[in-house]
Length: 158
Image 1 (cartoon, rainbow, N blue to C red):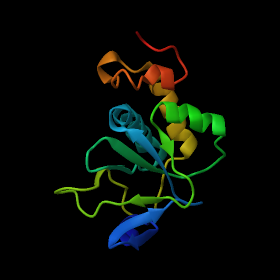
Image 2 (tube, helix red, strand yellow):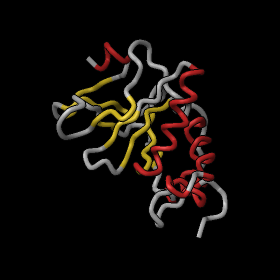
Image 3 (cartoon, one colour):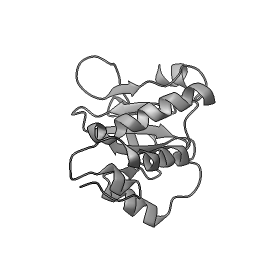
Image 4 (cartoon, helix red, strand yellow):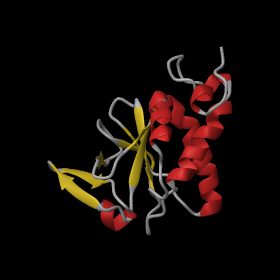
């Protein structure tokens, strides 16, 4: 159903729908509190760019996984910087567990893909959005151990 409805390259792994990160689809894991403003910004941009911002939340709602087009290189320095912020760019070959339903327990869609041809935001778009979130308001800031300003390249708030 996920393949037919959204165009996702779905595989079954232990009776669960998954996708394998590769040349067509990639993934970025972002702590949930940091992911909220990122998804808001992408959703606003998606209406003008005709892309969807598919996002999956884990069962504990601590990490949101953004499905992306893995276009362009990402340096080791960028990956280290993101890791300091609790953000992981999934490597090729890594699996992403896909939601089976939006009710009950397990993985769920926060931002469901648009039905039809798969249109994902580019990795660079997500990373630029994360950088812009460095100026987020105090009420949208994550806990002290993950500061948006420090992750966005600015000066951490005290």
